[in-house]
Amino acid sequence: MEYQNILTEVKNHIFYLTINRPQKLNALNRSVLEEIATAIQASTENADVKAILITGAGEKAFVAGADISEFQNYNVEEGRQLAKIGQESVFNAIENCTKPVLAAINGFALGGGLELAMACHIRIASNNAKLGLPEVTLGLIPGYGGTQRLAQLIGKGKAMEMIFTADMLTADEAEKTGLVNHVTEPGQLIAKAEEILAKIILRAPLALSSAIKAINASGQSQINGFEVEINEFANCFNTNDFKEGVNAFLEKRKPAFKGN
Image (cartoon, rainbow, N blue to C red; front, side, top):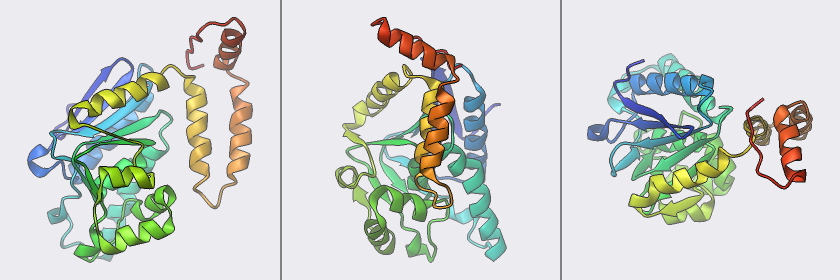
């Protein structure tokens, strides 16, 4: 597929997805979300891809929010569909992706941009990043999972303060709260992301997928996360990667996982 709003590349088993609307600070609109959904699906199905890196074009913004002009006249049902379709096709799809997804946050990550980053499994930020959910200043609340994922990541009280005040966090503040994993200089952001992903792609792909499923279950009250963990742990015993990992350990060599 030829994309109009994103750039994609596969290199060293990493799928690079760059939101490419720098003149709009990479704001999300319907077309961008549709392209992200398609790209995530394609990367999931691509056997050569072992991890995904999402970032924004330019140094000013990861994603500065949603394109407000697109939904300013929506009614209740249109608003419901906006949130429902976006959550299911993009944000939940990223969170439940069977391959590790890392967000490299360069500059502003506001509103839907922060929600996009929070849907990813790991977040790193440049030290000039600003992160926030300012929706209440528009008479709205976060609609792409922000109220849920922020509370899971930084705690209910901190999440409420951040959403109620609409204040932005600096990258260092975000790291202290656990919202981001690492902070780097802007010029080192992608290199740090690649350093982390280079370690990850050496691990057993099916085990990573099982870990994602089990960890995600911890945030879902209707699911017994311990049962999910037990089942996923058991499933690993039926993989060739488990046999390879154990043999490599016993033979004191590095494993060569094949994802089967």
